[in-house]
Length: 126
Image (cartoon, helix red, strand yellow):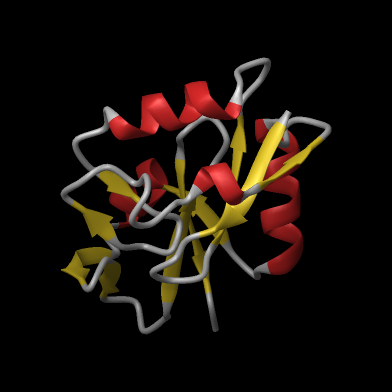
C-alpha cells in the first residue's frame, strides 16, 4: 500500500510505501524519528509527524513505489541530463550547498531527488 499526502510546510507530494503496516504503525515510526529531510528540500530537526506530514489524514492507494529502473527512466524522460552523486563528484561540479540546493561551477542550474532505494540523483533544470 502507498500512503500519499502533502507536506504541510512546502506542499511537496509525499508517497510512502507502507507495505502491510497500518497507518497507526506508520505514525508511531514517524514519531520516533529525530530528524528528516523532506522531498521539498527542507531539513527539520524534529519528527515529520504531525507538524509536517499529517499521515493519519492522507489517502491510501493500492500499489507500490516505482522500482529504481522505473524511477530513473521517468526522471530521464523529463530532464536533459540526470547524473548520480558519484558522477557529480567525479566531474567536481558541486562547490557547496545553499538553502538545500547545490551550488555548482558549470553554469547550469541543478536540483536533486532521491530514488526509491535512497540514491541521490541530480538533474539539470535548464
